[in-house]
Length: 591
Image (cartoon, rainbow, N blue to C red; front, side, top):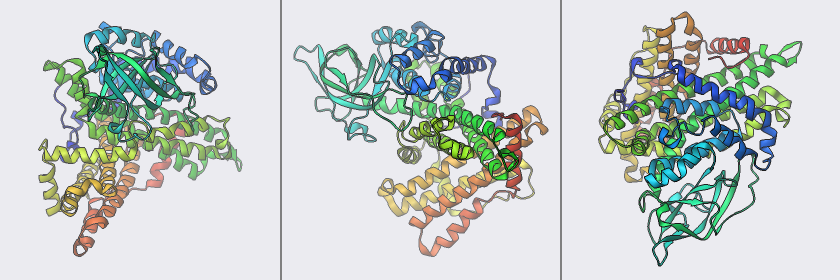
């Protein structure tokens, strides 16, 4: 049995963790590597040769490609064997998400089907519902969609107007309403639909079949990117939903929606890693092939800077995602060992780490946006041509900052959840914050070993976050949630700290496994990331202070943040060049 997760969700900001207590991607076992290879082989054989056909939404193509994935088991990685699946552990599922993440529109379709489409029924359905739908969703005989968003009810999902009224004979709910931005909407046979019963304040959830009378839809939406992903509005006009198709309990729909979104966020953070690695592949291939002024553009310092930055952002995202995923997996295993059933263990095991899920969704989606933007720039004029692969990568990336809750909502959610955990005394957030505020002195980072200095700097950065909390609470009180700019400053500081700590610990653990010489290039990655994170944290902290601090104490507070954000001085230009040279020599992402 796995031990308990070392840190609770969000607790990273008040505690440190040892390398023995984190997971790094280099530790994946052979079985997970086989799943990874199966996903990559599937993309190479079935998806990449058909990208143009997929983007044109050739009739029946996407559904048939999803069925092909079902034929080799890729739709059933989260599903127990009794329903036809393979029930892999959480880390393996996240690795599969990463591996399929380079599939452009196809990755959107398969993630929607296996995630928000299938899991509400698997985790919240009763035995009859699961027996009826899950085996066919696992094989690909049926396709799934998740119908939450409505016109006028985007981020405020609970304000939706779709209604369900119990029929006079008590056998059906009569469903009326409209849903929009429904992924897989054009071909999904099974829909999880959220609606309010009678005059309920909160949502309930229903399993609706596409072929039922009263279900109709608009034509496909015309989108900026992910053009191959079916996206439609769906209408429900007096649809008779059998009472046995109520999913979960009455009024539980909003909780179902939120909990499934927590899971979707960490999965999206993994998916973008795959997209980033493929964009880097195209970037370095082109940089090695394209010649200007008598040499390959990969030899120019400006291009090396871009290539190195792409690697650093991707490596950091990967380090953070798998750190969080292992904590989630340990939490799920612990709950199962205590007799908690599959659905609740998985849902609550992830929900405990809602803060990390939200932060990593933001960090990862913004990292991918950076990577694909730089890919277009490396291609130069050719990058603006739809004939190059980076055109599709650039357009398809943009949706990730909106999917699974906008990045703004997720930033606010992360800080709000952290403060609520503190108020519930799940860990000593406010006591540690008060101590930091009363004594904002930085630990000395000089004269220490490489990792000692890095980890001391990270502890200082955590202190920079914590010292702001008492002042913000005092200045704004109960209206703190309305100070969204300040809340987002805190969120940006949190995600930079988490990603940096995950990256440094990964490099340290990798060095212990492989030796110093093998990880010198990874120290370069950690150095560049620490340099950038320190500046970002310092800016966000200063912005927050300027919004609330007493003028008489402002200068000293800003100076304290600056001192807390110091990192050892390193020649970052040379670090970037070594990272880029390693990438250029391999001509692929090799980290």
